Image 1 (cartoon, chains in turn yellow, green):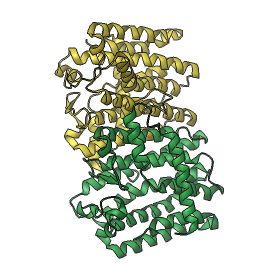
Image 2 (cartoon, rainbow over the protein chains, first blue to last red):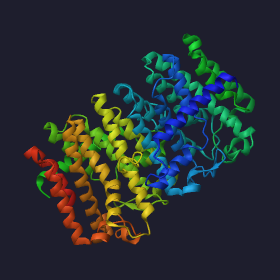
Image 3 (tube, chains in turn green, blue):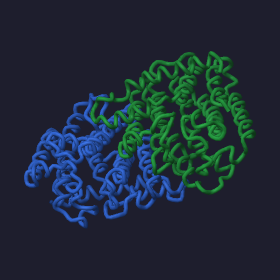
Image 4 (cartoon, rainbow over the protein chains, first blue to last red):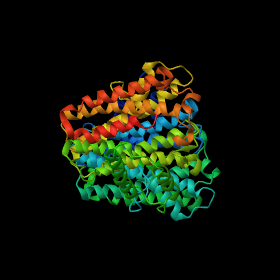
Length: 302
Length: 302
């Protein structure tokens, strides 16, 4: 990892953490249990990759990380966290460990974990409704994010994050086709990563054409990220992952290596990143920070 | 119930159902299971009281039910439905029956029920982001609704819907004080009813002073509604309620009659409605439809 991307990741995580600290109700604010549960999972050592992608997309458009954008990054991180809390529940993946720490329902019980996830989703939209930008842009961002985290709108748009989770559940126990794994990954992880980049651009005032370029960049980078995640699940130990390794295989989850093999998966991730970079050609060196973060997504140890 | 209020309730429910039919993905849209689950709970015979209050608040402001407001009413109903789905889960109230029908997790399993609740919350915000009104008003509505359904913002605002659910859980097994029951009711049910009325006013272009009058009206009417609900839980049979009667008492839930007795509770609900009506005095007969719906909330059989 180059010094530059290390610095970008560190600084992006730091402004996100500072914003989240202010946005989340304090641990001694009543009702206590849910606020502690929300904080437990939000401050569990996440790398804030989605917020960082958001900030760097904005920097590419306007030359700097714009004032107040950490609230947008934080809202995205709240949505990511809520999805993890619910995904870890006994009725879903039944995971006791996440990033090396006990999951929300293990510490606070299932009822509070369900409500803490709910409340993080709610707080994300509250946060978006207060962004210090024009109302037209803020409402665009709300719409983009809701679509990216939903189930697909009346069949006219591909499913978002929750849709991907459901497709994953519906497909358990059957051997997934390449097409199914592709659709699940694009929805379950890809959509939120893509919208982080898209809304960073909108926040910074990008025009419609640029937003669509960012969208295509994000779709490719997001898919590459999930492929690498699947590979790491097979090749790394539980200790390295901070969660139960090999779990995807054990539970017959739809994964990229199960369909394409490990070597081939890595090659495809690399190719997706190259395709993603091609979308940003016209931006020249201004795209370097964003590209370096995307590159980091696939060069994580595998 | 007068002919007028019957007609208002019927017509409000009808435009809400028609809008929900369009807004919710069809039962044959993939992924199927979640869309069927969302529809199962959304079309389970709810009276659409919150949407009706929203429409009548708007009518009081601009003289008619404004174009497109059924989408706002539908978004509010989606939020109400999501809260019921999660509230009914085994880890929370563990209810098998709601409005005389099996609850979402009984039919679709816990995993899909959790995600269906999540997705209804997401779809509500997507719907709000597409309201056919000025972006400034739409973003105000998003903020009002997120606050009303959250846990309370950094201790500076009273908790909303989720906060009320948590206070209810935290207080189980202890005899609640009058102050606690009051706080829980205002948060758990009152906040969403209040915001239905407030956002109806905003949608119709009400000024800041009028919005605050609607808020005070809604707070009083919402609390009265929940008091009557508590009374009905004690005095009606399961068949009349469409859910398990006497459940609040059996589970030591914080209820108004448990603290104040049944007769006294009914008297307080009536007084709250009179106080609520006083807030609307300046509107004269234009307030009659809204008042008649509020009156219906407390004159339900008890």
